[in-house]
Image (cartoon, rainbow, N blue to C red; front, side, top):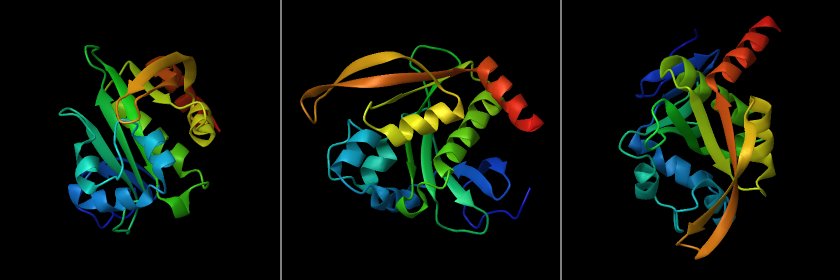
Length: 190
C-alpha cells in the first residue's frame, strides 16, 4: 500500500498507486468536463439530457448506489468515475455503470483498471454473485475494455429513451463471482 491520496473520500480498493475512493459531490464538475460531446454523453448516460451539469452527475446513482472516483496517489483531482448499483429485485446482483476516464488519460489501460478495482469491490467487499452492465454496440472501446476485463456477452436489450424519443439496442454483459475468482487467480499466478 502506497501513500494515501490527498482527497477526502474513503478508500475502498487500492492497487499500487491507484485507488477507488468514495465519490465527493464537489468533484462533479470534473466529471462534467470530461464528457466531450453529446454522443459521448449518450453512451455514458442515455437517460441524461444535454447539457450535462454537476447536479445531473450527483443524481446518477440511486439511493443505494455506490459512485466511486479513481485516483492516483498524491493527486487531488480524480482520473475516473464509475458506479456500482444494486439490480432492482435481485439480491447480490449488482450493475456497473457510468464508467468514464478523464480524456487525456484514455487509451492507457485505466478503463480496465477502474473496472478491475470495481469488480474487486463488488465481489470481494460486497460479496456479489453477479455484476452486469449494458453498453451500446457502437461503443467499441468500451466493449473491448469489458471483454478484456472478463465480461461475457449474454444478450441484447432494446430500451426506449424519452430524451431522444428512440429505441436503442444495447449489449448486456455479465460476470459471475466464480468467473471473477478464476480470473483473479490467473492474474496472481502470472
